[in-house]
Length: 275
Ligand code: PDD
Image 1 (cartoon, protein in one colour):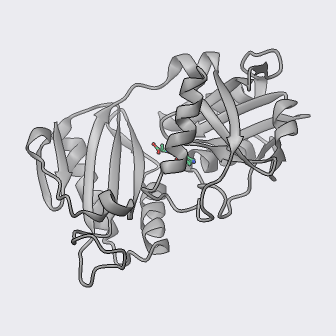
Image 2 (cartoon, helix red, strand yellow):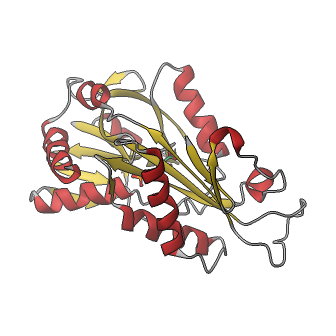
Image 3 (cartoon, helix red, strand yellow):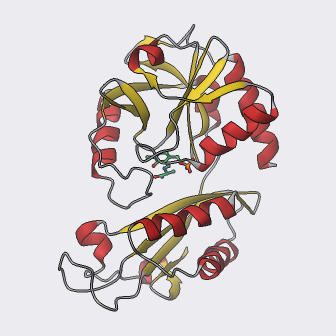
């Protein structure tokens, strides 16, 4: 496999990462995950816009968007993976550990590609989720490398035999540890508004476009844990999970536990957009 680190494409086993990369010490950087379907990037422009925006939110300025695109395009070509995902991260740079930004350090880019199939089984059968308190920082709209809370809360799901942890602030549901979340209640699709409390998922935005195109009633309006638990349908979204129905919340069935009608409709249109 060919990957990229700090200016060079190399075989995976020939890459050595600098231990003074601030990504290690501080999680001082941002990242994206982009999907490739049948050799084509999916929603590349949206991901690159968000990467540059996330970087500028943490004061990493002047990223060359075209260069970022060139790197991942080259990765896609060199690895000849038809269906996969690309991870790309930008750290503030390499410098001996010191909290303050290093003067003159150049951002360091790391990128690699993995083969990845679509999550068909879970898209048909749904997944179980648990819920937990959202104690993350107040810049969740930044796709930061700092994912300690997300990692710990995902682990709670795994230990509970579930797939994802949905987070809430004082009973108001925000998003999952690595996904956005939607409910359908009385025919209305709802998800948390895109503010500093969630990552504005590219898949989330795609689902809202689909809702608009399909004439579904929808609202970017937060909902409570009680509304989550009494919803007719619940699904989570992300670049890797696509549109995945939720069958159980904290062990209780959502509706009759099977994939809902509106979830199905959205999945069908999502399929169309991929191909
Ligand atoms: N996670 N919310 C959080 C906290 C996320 O980490 C992600 C994505 C999403 C969904 O965003 P998108 O639809 O743009 O993928 C929402 C990626 C896939 C990850 O960390 O692997």
